[in-house]
Figure: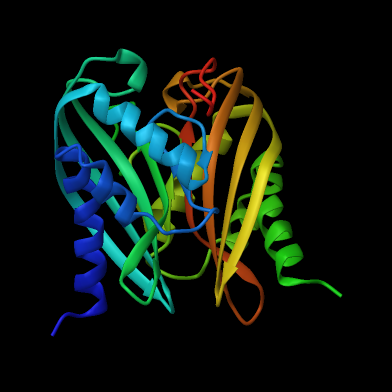
Length: 140
Length: 140
């Protein structure tokens, strides 16, 4: 039996698989079909709405020759029909556009919020931010 | 009558007022009394747990001679006993420690998640990230 936690974890992984394979159709299926979806790419301002968010992913995919995500510190919490995932994205990338705010090997910390929909959990908010001080740790 | 939206908006504002006045007691009252609270300061990795998070605020407050937040693009959504606020923090600061990842005038985009508790809405997750490309806008 698939638990809610399993389903949310799978939905979260699907986001990264869609980006790794540069599959915009998969990316569109992941996001909730609502106008209030919200997205922050590392170093970017907030984007609101499906159209803007999908355009941003298509730009990122077009400018990324190679990207691979290794997720660590994945924590999932469910409260009613909302699920929260926080994780660290350890990224290997071959992005060609330095404007994209990514490059080489990088650490990003992310909050993903999913809503329970009849068909599956769908992404409502993606907030990814760069870890700018590699030497910093959470004990200081 | 105070609506839920009003109450959440006030709780959100209280976070910034507590930082502006460097009042750690107010900051402790804002955060949920739970071990799974999570916090990302701009450019920082994820911090989990009240002790670590409160220590980080005390460090930030100690290293900040002056800070003022002008919040724009504040949006609030409530789903059951969870409330989400996204906003842009327009910051004027006199931070003395460049390691803190802030300095001068800066734009930060933030997701704050609150839980409904018997006494009031309390902060469960704060994720703040720097907007690194000032010239970037969401129409590109």
